[in-house]
Length: 477
Image (cartoon, rainbow, N blue to C red; front, side):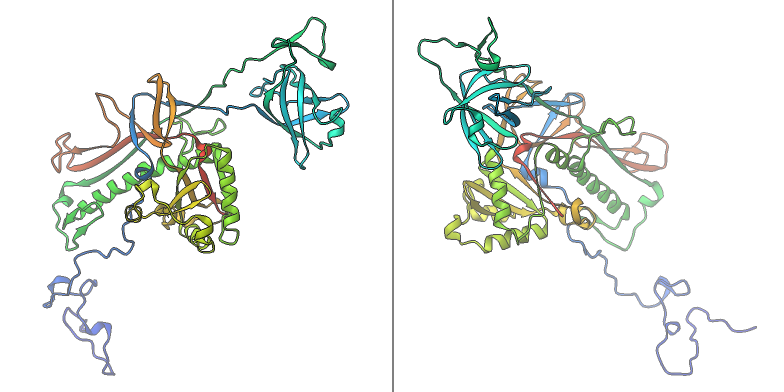
């Protein structure tokens, strides 16, 4: 019978050289494992090759978490104060301008009001409204600077806005229509403008996860020391699995309301409604900047400022950026003279540079705005948005700082809330902000005869994005 290699045997070789079969192995199938006489040098702790792997924290920096007791949260936002219309057509011969009335656009301009008429090519005329039809949106106008509208040189569609009114001496506020709108016995009084009710809503979603382990494996001691981001430590491997499930779930709490999408009417998804997340809200109601780069630098950024001027003009804003966009901002700022552009500012952090830098922010001022920028890990991580490039990539977000005043439908009063905040379901009976509980018969749970432990996680929440017109989403190209 031929001799086969046994544990500890040496296989002869023609040359004097080290070979794999000349050595005792620690973990090989034919090796000795722990039966060998020499204990290997063991590194008990795992190497943290990805650093801190958690992604949450963005919403903690910019918002708040508030309880709610309903299936949806409803809020209303103010509309603009002054009257203006885009895409109006005009008839030079008839001296009329037609407002494109629709279901959500009505004509509220009264006779004797004064308007500015502008086209897209630099043409402008100041006119007096001599007649106005609410239903059709037709205005009779006479220019101040010439005899008729035809001589003003306006081209294409026009934009108009009201800047005041002018009445003749000895008249009241009811003026008879003139020109094509002069109908016997039909007067045109000042129209009362009732503010439009602009309402927004969002619905919470239920987020769940769990981790299960049988009773035998909870008693197994490993040689790898558990050490996780939340401080869990020991030689029980299930502690690591349970801890990572919790950390992953906590990330999901933020990722779900950042990435959330409402179920569309054409969707075939049944049983759930979805929720409007941060990205969806800003794309639907906010501003999108495509392809910001260091090459365009200050020109692209000044376009953003000009747009902010037309919106709420919130003085202090925070920039959460991925690595490339953050470097583009650094290059942009490095190319600008601090003396011309105003240098840095840290007003949001009690004007303390040290406080701002400790939080990872650096500040600068441009125009009448202060900006504080920092990296957003979620946009850099290769397992999330960091893996995406091109038009689908999200490269950053501009978030206004401070609070806004809104009318709360539940409380029936005006309240101040951060522009960005989370609402979670809670009442005296149950708090669903972040629930966790054990089931089974292991680990202190005595809810069933199953020889296992199941750790359950649950939350019900949604994100409220108020005044989304002040947010800017940076997207790739």
